[in-house]
Length: 280
Image (cartoon, rainbow, N blue to C red; front, side, top):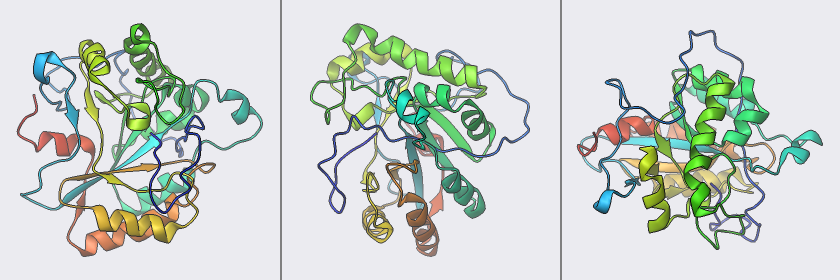
């Protein structure tokens, strides 16, 4: 997901996809990720369908009952960015993942299938680490509506297959348990998109705090924006890429101790959804 916010360069064309993070492999017995989420007893919590059976949308957890916050990191790589990676552009950020591990911060990574194809070992390492959970950010990182920050668009009859293709890419990379959560590229969606994805069985996950890390170079400004916006139950959207969000790792090192000082506990998105009382 890429968005324009205050304190960062906002004129960037968001077709330049932001991408994700990597880390060394963690030995762990894996279980294949489903091509689409299944209704098993151990299924992670999802919201019940919205009106008319539309895909439900989650933006934040409960505001009462404890000071929890979820840091989420979008692993954006568009379907057509392979040549940029081949020329040496870094679409990962191992240092950020290392910092999250060192600080013992659970996190949810919304990963595109294209990124998992490019960096399967890193996708597998993140997906097998119990500190993290991987969720779906589409395969292509193309928009599911028109006029979404300059992103190419996915045709309505290909939306479902684009999401399912990402789950297939995670499975191929060795991600054991991709979550039944989906974040729209650019954060852009409409009723048609929600209706089309209802058959996949995912919960769409948005956010209520924009970090401003996209294309930012001022880590202090990113940290300040997060700290000013966080409330109990907040979902913070950030990015994990050396090329297009270089200030994020430094910002995280400021954000985490300050929020802990304020009494916050870091959780994954699944815990926030499970705490809503509206999950299934």
